[in-house]
Amino acid sequence: MLGSLLLLPLALVAYAIAVQTPLSPPSNEIPLLPESESDDLLYLHRKLVEIESITQNEKDVGQWLASYLRDRNFTVELQEVAPKRYNLLAYGKKRETTLLLTSHIDTVPPYWPYYYNKTSGIIGGRGSVDAKASVAAQIMAVQGLKEQMQDDISLLFVVGEETTGDGMRTFSDWKNRPNYDIVIFGEPTEAKLVCGHKGITMIKIKVTGKAAHSGYPWLGVSANDVIVEALARLLELREHLPWSEKYGNTTMNFGRVEGGVAANVVAETAFATLAVRIAAGTPKIIKELVTDALKEVKASVEEQGGELEIAWSNSGYGPVNIDCDVKGFEKLTVNYGTDVPHLKGDHKRYLYGPGSIFVAHSDHEALKKKELEQAVLDYRRLIVETSFMHHQERQDL
Ligand SMILES: *[C@@H]1O[C@H](CO)[C@@H](O)[C@H](O)[C@H]1NC(C)=O
Ligand SMILES: *[C@@H]1O[C@H](CO)[C@@H](O)[C@H](O)[C@H]1NC(C)=O
Ligand SMILES: *[C@@H]1O[C@H](CO)[C@@H](O)[C@H](O)[C@H]1NC(C)=O
Ligand SMILES: [Zn+2]
Image (cartoon, rainbow, N blue to C red; front, side, top):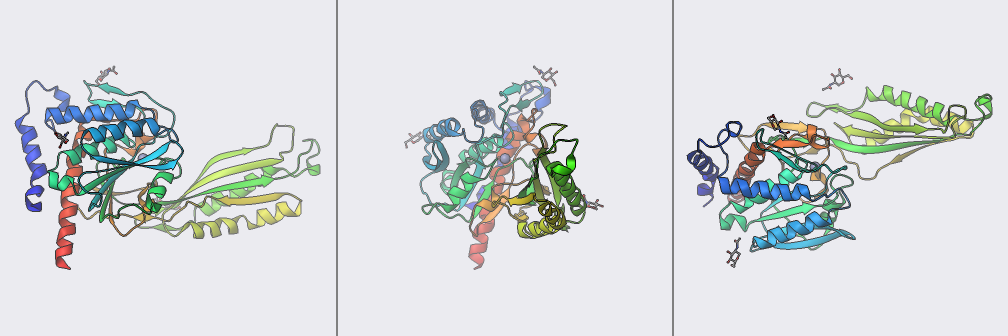
């Protein structure tokens, strides 16, 4: 059974070549999918992108998708994450399945409308890549499989990936959820298999000084002076953070720095927010390094009657290793965070998706129709090959 399924993608490619017609526009070259399937894919992707779903506002797109999937005979469950915010779990004949395909339905702001340029084959708009391309391709991939295979796959589309990962965390903590053997996550990876990604921790440094007339600065404590000094220490520390062969250097971004009220007033308050992308070690180690680097600055401002506080987000994690033992895919590691660490369990986990992360959060978020189609074939290949490996492992036991 599985042996014959392995031939499926090849058969599809052969079929795609067979149906090629000279009428197809030159930029589209060889069609990857049969025309009706390609049309269905583009329709689904367009509808998803057209419905704005910036994090916190995922309800409409979730509702539309639930009815789309129910119309195609999936059983759909909605899990409430917060008022008006739902994860969507869909499956065929049985709820407990070997495989789970998952991605997210929220996007970053602002909304950009959908467009499709037939001449160039480019499809754009907010979410067109991150991650509605993955969502659409995963659904089409499952629908094209034989029924028996389909019934062993679940689909999960979560909210909140772009901010705190609260959607996937809530799913993970759900007492009533099935466990899976294989989970395939969809995020823009340029159609490569991701072998791991850096960890992250967020830091906020808050300084409280004492306001004064700028003509008499010695009467105050400048929070701006303190924050500048603190950041100078961190600039130095930044060169000496843990690194690894696999992920390269840990990086530290001073994302936002703000302080004071006017040029002629000694600043009373200042703060800086930082994102650290962790290549080795844990958030705890980074925390210790930062705390240590700021020890003297902190002691000095406290001596003058001011304050320096270091606050940490509690959702940080170290580097995340991901399975990538499937032949025939290019491999890479990435520097962005995903929902992968938020789903607990001892499942094998893969990360693959169409489109590039480099355009994902930009005002020119877009991908080629062909990339979208390729992803359908690639997801099928991943499904077939990973479940084949899984069954072989079980036979070996
Ligand atoms: C859904 O199931 C019904 C009843 O079994 C069947 O008639 C229909 O063709 C199915 N629809 C799809 C899209 O598979
Ligand atoms: C569509 O793409 C073609 C080829 O790249 C380009 O010449 C044309 O201006 C684009 N059309 C629009 C409406 O952007
Ligand atoms: C890591 O940092 C070192 C020194 O700070 C630099 O020489 C090296 O090029 C960096 N490596 C990467 C992969 O960026
Ligand atoms: Zn994403």
